[in-house]
Length: 261
Image (cartoon, rainbow, N blue to C red; front, top):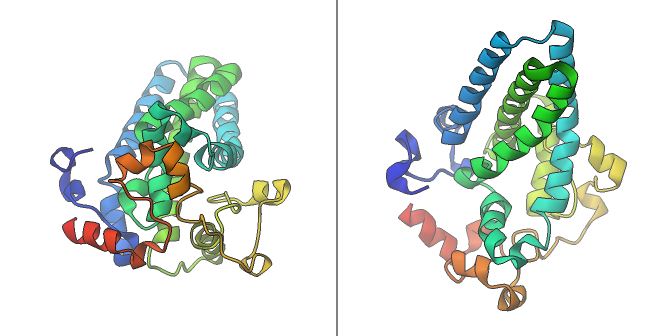
């Protein structure tokens, strides 16, 4: 999205390691994707009111989506966002760059922390609508979609808190933050959850940092190195000819970009 098309404070970039909790709240509710999720949730509720399912079926449809969300996120995060196949396909390279590579290149860049609507909305609808419809028809589908959209809002905010220069008062959220920071700054090959690490534990990808003493050399580039870029150049080209691997605050190119922003 070009800066001229961004609303309000989003005409400039924001970095969570330089923001307060209050500033995050203000930025969060002005971000276009969050506004879209909330608006579509309200629209889904109106559809439910027109074609209501029973309270039990509605609760079951919505609850099924909330329960399925951690597993869906785990699978997408591990096998899609951390894949090594998307950047090899020219027409998928820009999508992979936007939805996850840029986030690992600079984990505290708020604008690329949020999911891209052209990828999140089809995914949410693709999971929620069939399950909801099977449980409660049109009303069940509407309830499931609203649940999926609102759960996404919660996930996005918790994700922001995990990157914010802020110590959560909640021990539960502090533990989530600890795991997620290890994923971003120590070893990306594990701790794929956001609000739940149940599936990491179940599938063997949960870890504490002492268990992996050596830092992953690809934690900031997800394995997309200069050598890889020689064969698959599209992400590098879109990144201005740069493949960065070090800490984002210790790169000259990143400092220049931030000054420009």
